[in-house]
Amino acid sequence: MFILQENAIDISQARARYADPSQNGALVTFEGMVRADEIEGHTVGELLYIADHPACLAEGEKIIKEALSAFFITNAVCIQRIGRLKVSETAVWIGVWAPHRDEAFKACRYIIEEIKKRLLVWKKEFYTDGGKAWIQGSQKPAV
Image (cartoon, helix red, strand yellow):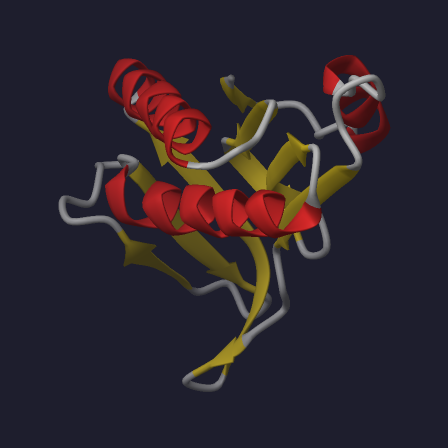
């Protein structure tokens, strides 16, 4: 399951919703957070994520299905935030459930690497000094 959402990610809810203790002995998660990087003398205050919704949803689901086919896992979920996020907010959360940890780790890494490569998500940095810059995506949207 792949989800795009503007509201904060409720990690406890996501973990509980997809867990199945009768099949799983492992849950591996990845949480990507907004960090206060200093870039060329500017400190990041917040980020704006925008996405091509239909393309992201389709490609995100495809990536999850690939992971379910390629690894011995029982479930996988990726929640990608869009909109404005402040420093320390969660931008992406991935949960992978499996009978054993090794496959869960492999599948979780696969999902985040493919998400970063293939999703049409653009990121704009807003600096604490009032500056801003697009930093990711091949064609920068006019926002």
